[in-house]
Length: 242
Picture (cartoon, one colour):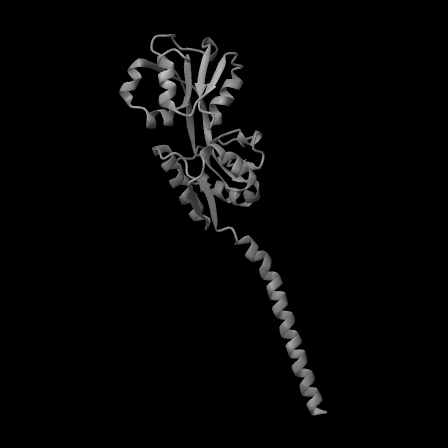
């Protein structure tokens, strides 16, 4: 009788141990799932002073919430589609409003900085040119800001896309096009200052640059925005982007 009792106690002990182990694993599973995203991957932007500043700001904010970011070489032209499809975790910085075309990308509430769109024309052609004063303009299709501005202004002339700024300036000088829309920081990064003795330039639009994450990372974005708001470069007046 004692032998049976001892065996019964041993069996009950093993059963209880197995139950506790299974319960522990079940409880640990959602915790492990929450902690699985420790590194987010973004495409490497053009190496400029502005992009280095943005990456530094993001690195500091992500580290504060326990996440590392990895910057990889990736075709810039296809990076938005890749981020929208979840192949990349988001975009380092883009002008506000791209979620209309890429609905899986969610913008930070807090902007990282503000970006200027510049119109370049041949020197002396017109004073304070308006877009619709020009018959033909060119822009780089990889950056949606210019295209959005063209649509906003209901431009009726011819639009030529060209990703090479030097080529665009040659086209402007020889009269193939009448104007170029370009992001100011790209202009300052790629073109020597003395080149502008032949051209007039004016800022025609300004938009905030926001960090974007794929919608699967919404919880991370909320924590990130808290970090952005604590930084001195963040402005006090924030409106939720559409």
